[in-house]
Length: 243
Image (cartoon, rainbow, N blue to C red; front, side, top):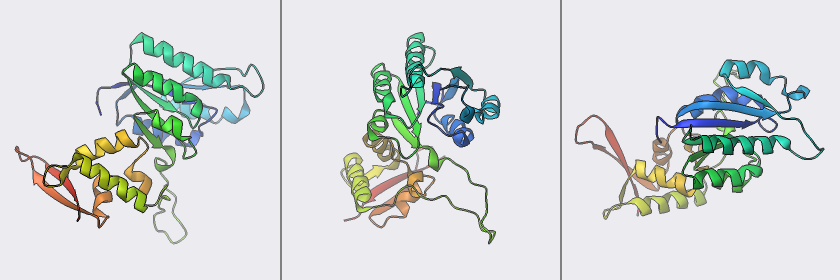
């Protein structure tokens, strides 16, 4: 992750609910600076009216695109054309494509071929071809902050997108093996990087954990160890598969 990455954020307004926008923009700042922010849709349609205030609050530019033909999505075409114009302008070194539509799979692939980092965001229904075409894919459901409280006054918890299945554990074990030293220990930072390369939509938050460390700590199949850095400022976390 490069902190000074300049990111073009392109949002499929016909496909993404307005309720996610605040958390989505906050998430994007973890990966770089959103220097271009555009959302595409037919703004003459009543169902897009709720976007108006949100766009002003987040300085997102709405791009008008009329539907030329019934059943054809002109919004997708406009977004793809703009993305290529931005690519050739060389004003950014990363893109965030926000959609749950597989039509952007080829676009994501083309941008990565040009050497740019591509983040994808969409709902859980997003088809897998678009997900794996991105460097990293984040499900919008895990970003939604819910401040409501149930009747008993206890904080309301978000539903996890996935359970930690034996298949997930095997995937983690294999990734630890792939990055481990001769003693079987792997630096958790390297493990996390390889996980994203293998599965761009893997996120500890999908399983109810804010970070990768507590996810590994919750599993009996792994040992964790803290080690001091040479300068002593930070602790490094290492993980090892249990025999």
